[in-house]
Amino acid sequence: MPYAVDLFCGAGGCSEGLIQAGFHILFSSDISDMVEVTYKHRHEQLGLIQGKNTWFERSDIRDLTGEDIRKHITSLEIFKGKEMPEIDLMIGGPSCQGFSRAGRRDKSDPRNMLFGEYVRVINEIKPKYIVLENVEGFVDMQFMGYVGITGIEYPDGSVTPDILRSELNEIGYDTLEPRILNAADYGVPQRRNRIIFMGYRRGLTPPKYPEPTVKPEDRVTLLEAIGDLITDPEQREQVNPMPSQYQLDSISGRTPAVDGKPIAAKTTPNTELSRITDIVRERFELFEAGESGTYLKRRVMENGIDISDKPALIALCSERLEMSPDEVVELFGKPGATKEQAEILLTKKNIRQKWDPNQPSATVVTIADDYISPWEPRTFSVREMARCQSFDDSFEFLGKRTTGGLLRRVEVPQYTQVGNAVPPLLAKAVALEIKKVL
Image (cartoon, rainbow, N blue to C red; front, side, top):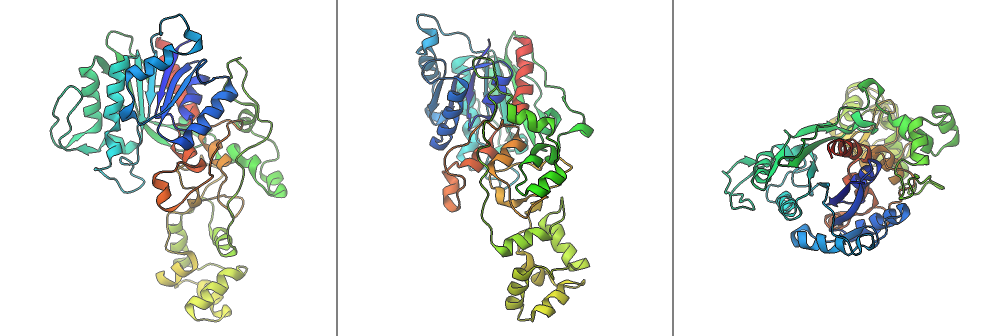
């Protein structure tokens, strides 16, 4: 069985894919204590026991050395009296917030430098193959005054991929041209583009990027992914009378335990839903499938919208606009509402979107209150988000369900654990290509 190390492992999406591809994870690491609880719990489920056949180390990668990793691996019970085996694959996704195009990009974010620490650990462990995963914005982030681990001073404006490939070349690794892969092409019910770097120790057989396993017309849709998790029984029976193959696979499990058998979900964890007010519920009901807040606002202003059955919204607008309820219904029922009036009805927030049930989901991120179910006026549960990422239902996310404000900078609650993860089926596709050349 090939051996792997998973750095920046998060809750374990990448690890799930590696295990599905037949790798044994000897060592993994992440900085978050909240992630650690989820990750260790899942590994215990699978029979990967701390100190016996695997080791998780909670650590800032800047403090993690190759010597630390070797010490923990050689101390495992399965290697008692034996030498540490070669590491076949090291995989990692350095924190991506500074690179992300989804929010405000911050070139000064210290997390942008973590890929350099990843290269350092690669140099200290010398695995046969290496993989780095990140957001698309990783491709064009520029650096000023970057100095590599061997002392190379890169010209101002050098972009991350060029630095990374040069650094790996300096320590004896050849690399493939980085490629953007869409998770939806590998059976994940989500449109999620990620940049993938693959490298190999000089002299070894180069790997290839995985070919899509799913044709565009056969991509798993949101309905096929989570239709069985609709909470209203009548609605569920109407739109999802029979479970899809994806739903069945999620329930029966894709990730094998150490005995080779996947763990079937006896219950469905992480299904708690956020409570919402009547005003928010009625706002959610105004969206059409696939529609964003921007397009809804434009529709209200240009075409008008019937809110006669939305008493909470009528009351709110009546108070704020100093109009009678009938005048409010008339105002919004025809074209001509101003932007300011539409924003009282809908709020200024434009990023919110109701997902299309007949398409893969949009990219799952860490704040789930921006997404609306196409079947019910609500946001999604952690489990529904996890399904969209291709996690098994037996995978239980632990810790706080969500957080807010400044705590988002330091806490990694369940929604964040899901949103930050590499989709297991995408990780599996990449890992299988490494396995082919081992």
